[in-house]
Amino acid sequence: MWSKFSLVWTAAEMDRSELTDLELERYTRHVRLPHMGYEGQQRLKRASVVVVGVGGLGCVSALYLTLAGVGRIGLVEDDQVSLHNLHRQILYNSDDLEEDKLGLAVNRLKQHNPEVEFTPHHRRLTQGNAREIIRDYDLVIDGTDNLETRHVINRACVDLDKAFVYGAVNLFDGQVSVFHASQGPCLACVFPIIPPFEKEKSPERLAVLNTLPAVVGALQAAEGIKLITGLGKPMIGKLLIYNALNTAFEQVEIQKNSACPVCGS
Image 1 (spheres, rainbow, N blue to C red):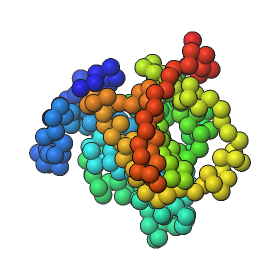
Image 2 (cartoon, helix red, strand yellow):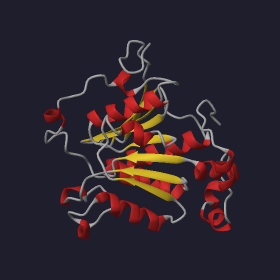
Image 3 (cartoon, rainbow, N blue to C red):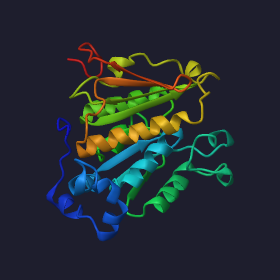
Image 4 (cartoon, helix red, strand yellow):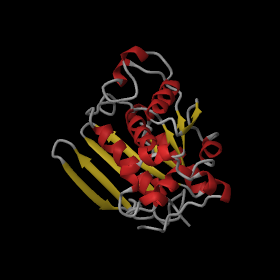
C-alpha cells in the first residue's frame, strides 16, 4: 500500500460510502482483491474524478472508472462525433455522427453503471475556467489531444494541489505519467515548451494506431484507482513509454525542475 498521496473526506461523505448489497455483488471481484477489500471500494465510491476530453483516451479511462465504481465522474467535452473518431473512440457509433459527444458519453456510461453520478461540463477547458471546474474533484484524468490544454490542466492542478494522470498517444507510441507538484515534477518540468498549434495538428500528429488509446486509457484508469485507494505505487516521478510495434514498455525517471516556471521555487 502506498500512502503518501491521500484523499480527505468529510464525515457525511464517509457515511454515504457504505456499499449496498447490489454494489457488493457488482464489485465483488474488486472487494476480494488483496489490499483493496471493502474499504478500498468505499474509497472509490467516495471519490470524484474529472476526465478532460472524452475522445480516444477519455472514452476508455472514463469507462473503466465507471465500471470500477468511482462515485462521481465529471466529463469535460465540447466536440461532436465525426466519422474519423470511430476507429478508436469506443463510446460512439455510426448512428452518432454530428451529435454532441458529452451527452452520448454520459448516457452510455450510465448504462454501464447507474450507481455512478455524472457531472457534464459542456465546454472547452481554458485558463479562465480550469480552476473552477477542477477544484471540485479529487483528481484529474487527461483525455486531451494537445499539449496546450495539458498545460492548462497542469497549471490548475499545481495551484489547487491536485494530481493529474497524463496520457498521450501518437502514431504507434503512448505515454503515461502522474503529475503532482507537491509530490514530484509537474508537466512543465518535463514538457516545458508548448509546440505551435499548426505543428501539433500536422497530419503526422493526427495519426494513431486505434488500439493505442485503449492501452493508455486503461493504464490511466489504473493509476487513478491506485491514487484513490492507496494500492501500489502511482507513477509520480516516472514516465511510462509504450511502443506498440515492438510490444515494448520503457519506464524512465523524471525529475522535478527547481527552475520550473509553474511549480519551481
